[in-house]
Image (cartoon, rainbow, N blue to C red):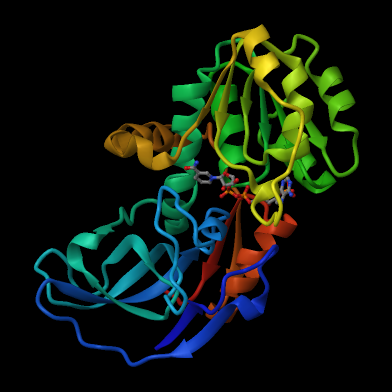
Length: 332
Ligand code: NDP
């Protein structure tokens, strides 16, 4: 069985040598267990944080531990009466071709949803993150201006569309012209700003003549610095991610935001999707309904092959993905 382990803790931007491809024997499932074959692996920016030996909302990977993330797998052998061979399951599973898992650690997925990868993207973790972060914290109202950074990624692209559904004017910030065209032409964003080509502060001022009511932050850093001066009274800022700083080796100093928050009475709130675990059903129902009504579109960047999981992970920090990044490891 081929596995990908954390070989050493990355310093700065992770490199291939931080990971080890290792062969290990495959055991047989015992009572209450399943043997599953990995089909699709989700690669996510938050995994970078788990590679550091630091306290967080989720324990760090240990050296020599198999990396794990959201995985869709197919049951090969079942010693549980809840599952039969061929079932597709979703769980937090290892980056390995085969896994022995407790049956209760995975859940059967609704195979009527096509493609099944949606369970890892818009109808899965990243969709729920967008849904709860935007609606619970951001609370966009009709006619308000919502700005989203990391706008062409998995979370950001869903955030912008949900904001449109709620009648907001939506401005996205992303890293290529192709991504910006996708946002305005395919997803209905009102304006898209290419932060690598444009002066973000000036572009935002032009794109947001009435100021900014909601800033859904996926990236932090200088992009967020450009947003803060434009916040309106009672603005809301769901702090979802800060990918621009995940590979920093030194603490970055930027403009301090306290004065802006005081002057605007703005609410800035960090969250993780897990905060809403008791409401996932509500979120999935809403997202699935909008998807079936054609109100939510999605894009997935699918990389082929177990050997390319690390490449796909590293590509997140280069902005190579449009929409959700997923690796296809085997056929269903
Ligand atoms: P994405 O699909 O958005 O992929 C990452 C994207 O980030 C890249 O495509 C790239 O797009 C952008 N990016 C990379 N480096 C930088 C940089 N230095 N500055 C600005 N943008 C950069 O990933 P997700 O949608 O899965 O995650 C988006 C954010 O949300 C991440 O910060 C992640 O950690 C966070 N997150 C938080 C969750 C929570 O529970 N709080 C749950 C899930 C995700 P571009 O070409 O535009 O630069």
